[in-house]
Image (cartoon, rainbow, N blue to C red):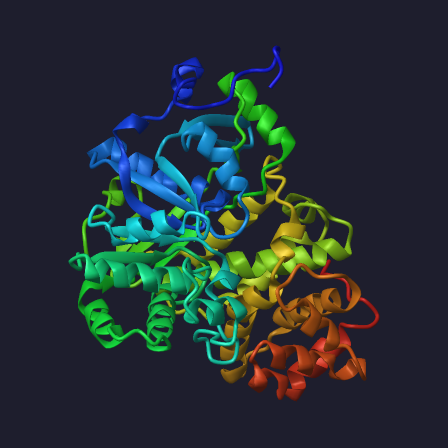
Length: 477
């Protein structure tokens, strides 16, 4: 910081921030009652805001201890700021920035492993939330269970002092919690996975079952009665923060913020109401608590996330940089609507879920020129995302005898990406090798890598995908 630069956001400088941009709660009155694994931009633009609004409405001291799994960048950004950061809502009419005050401390999962373990065992902590992305769960693509041969899982099972995998961290934390008296706790996956609550429960239990712990059976029995795994649906588009975003935040706040995040005006959180212990009054903040989140989950995964991935791969081929760029093309909106109309045929009818209105809202959200949501970010980790976004509806629709031209287009666009460009994907090398040998067989090999043997053996589907590989297919116009 130079003599002319503004001071950095922190509790000591919060009174410099314009009153309308300060948190609606006193950050000093919070204590860590929630542990969040994966404190990236999405959590800070979504669950942390809901928790702050619930705290403002009902109190309870609901602070969040945020944990980063890999990079220390979030720790380096937020720890000097006492956990404070800003959220800028990217409205079409102009940005609106304010400080968020719910994060009480920021940890690195392994560097601060002892503190993380103590928090997970603490009776004060009654909720653990997660946004670690699909690949952070270390699942076997063939079985959907825990990938026991994954190096992170293998080394955690071998007994490293501070677990580096999410399953290992939770298992060790629950074991310490049981030993400390066993107060109930709820573990809430907020990642874009179908049945995310059931998935998390399975992975934690499979990790424990694979250990050599002498109390593992007792621990598994205790989890059955004392640990809840609610399913969730979360929705808000949160682009990667840019230097321009940070300058916008600094102008609004009159202080610098190294942890600034941004997001669209739209936000949604649907929660299965099966908590095992105390939680914030999230319903006062607009969270929908329901017995079954699956209809909302399927609509979000298959329509929003599915069309997002399709737009990303097609848009990159056509020189677009953002989602709004794609929607500004002659074919962008038509592609979204055609894809959603096709994928929506795989969704069950649900009271209160208006699919035509939902699709209209997606078009409006994608076209928001203030978002600047980079499609390169959306295209990352395709092997982890598309099984649930594309392959699940594809499988159901083809079993019902329905045509799937847009889903075939989507697969072809992703396949071309694996062939023609370096990938930011945990399975990048395997995907590249799928093109060794005759290229006509690559679609089958790619689907088999994703655990979709049935689709790889679907000759009509493979023929449709092959037809779009060469020459490069153009989006509908």
